[in-house]
Image (cartoon, rainbow, N blue to C red; front, side):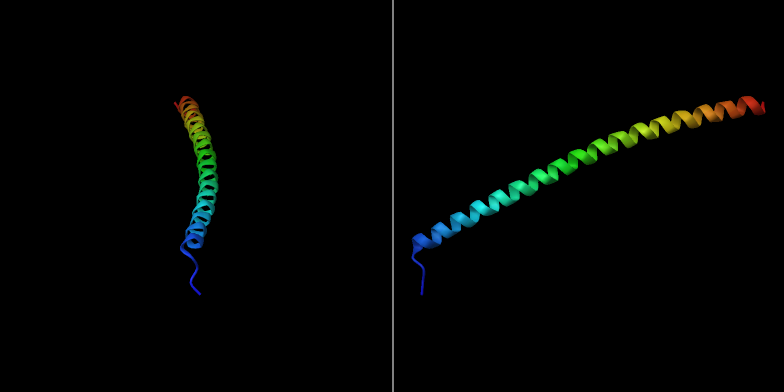
Length: 67
């Protein structure tokens, strides 16, 4: 049996609405995780800069001791 056009249209709208909500939810999750990743990368950059400073200090101290 063929469903009336009104029913098909209504089902299509319901499906579209569900997909919209689902994609919206997943997009929010993705945005939150990208934000968290961005914050972690900023902290990593800070740690790298600190390690570079420490290495330069150790290198300078080593040169002072050896010279």
